[in-house]
Image (cartoon, helix red, strand yellow):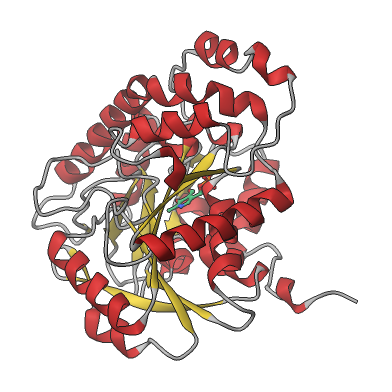
Amino acid sequence: MFSSRLDWAAGPNPLSRLLHNKRSAGAEILDLTESNPTAAGFSYCSQLVLAALADPRSMRYEPAPAGIIAARAAISEYHSNRIPVDRILVTASTSEAYGFLFKLLANPGDEVLAPRPSYPLFEYLAALDSVRVVQYPLVYHGGWAIDFEALGSRITARTRAIVTVNPNNPTGSFLKKAELSQLTALCRTHDLAIISDEVFSDYGFEDDPARVRSLSEVEDVLTFSLSGLSKVSGLPQLKLGWIVVSGPESLRKQALDRLELIADTYLSVGAPVQWAAALLVGSREEIQGQILARARENLALLRNKIGADSPWQVLDVEGGWYAVIQAPRIHTEEEWVLTLLDQDNVLVQPGFFYDFEKEAFLVLSLLTPSDIFGEGVQRILGRA
Ligand SMILES: Cc1ncc(COP(=O)(O)O)c(C=O)c1O
């Protein structure tokens, strides 16, 4: 009856089952996985947001497949006016942008390369377009880097694109300039596009000239840079994302024409959020400041509590909304997360949710309110 696109196991896992049981029994859980900024105790300027969404121009329906010019101009401004509006296409989220790009670049059964560990949603997004995700490893030697040998060896005749997440979720590692050169050389050789997920690029903890902030000005490879209001303005509920297209002119134009056709088929982005984009993107510094301050505070606490002689280790992190800690191997990841929840009422994510290649890693959200974060970390460290 149903298509095989949805053949993944969607049932509850042991962690979600235990969480449900604990909450039903009234346990007070310290949730160190909260990554919804609207539920993490930040103070939004709701008047500004709601007033921006009430623009009278929203009462008129004027379909614009690539997006209303005012919204694309706001995104161009976000990119310091270095990207002309005709290279920008709006979508109803970054997730939708992935779907558009898989439709644009891949036939059913084709492959895209995506980093491991990384954000688990790619697998599902690709499956919905009958595209296969092949993972390439990021390796950790005190900092994360792309394993280019492994990446090269995974390119086949069916590979269409390489996804890079910059900075990556949950490792918080930025792409470096030297890596970008290797990446573009590989893509030129094999005729591949780059999909650059830049949703967290404003959340770097320190400046580092070796890092690449955005791939939106890559010239020699067809490149799609993705972001959206979810992270840029901490407003995931408003559903506005975007794609910036860069690369050789002829490919870029063909890609944009085809993307417009895809977007025209759905016309999914509502007018109010597009008219609001200038104000919402323009006022991002207020919420970004709060998020960065909390992430830095939580990270400092973590580094402070996990000293050099601890059996625990905080992995290097350059930006983003997460920290990864390595746990002593006295338990598997699953045992760690289940024990922490069952006995300490602390909820964290296991590394295997993100496909870490080995055990045992725990992923903590740096968006967690700092009192909860501090108490949660105390209980975690008390276990070993
Ligand atoms: C790396 C990454 N890309 C994309 C998304 C999805 O963003 P959106 O809400 O715009 O679909 C997320 C959400 O957490 C993410 O972590």
